[in-house]
Image 1 (tube, helix red, strand yellow):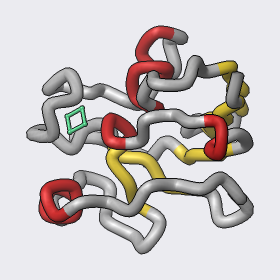
Image 2: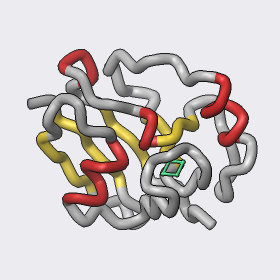
Image 3: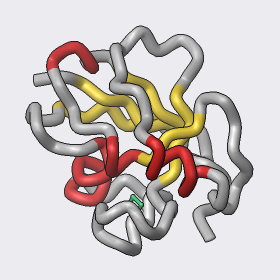
Image 4: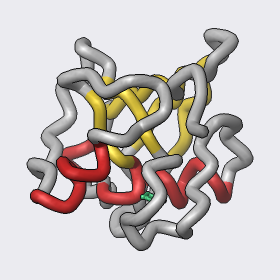
Length: 107
Ligand code: FES
């Protein structure tokens, strides 16, 4: 299974085997990764699943669609070029090795 690594606010790294078809947000929630709130449950209306993609990550990611790009304008911690909404990142084998940072706040 692809491995996704979450870097928490305190610097702790959590490497998790994620089944293909599971979103980065869902894997975080199911594995008690702190800092991804996902208040809307993944229906693309809250932006509290915001993550920053690590610059060293070589995982191939789908491009964000227009809805994700619009919602990223409202993230609490500040949008960066590497910002993504983790509910929109559905894990596929090509995403093995993905590294994401949990932002300092979600709301
Ligand atoms: S969980 Fe609400 S936008 Fe991702």
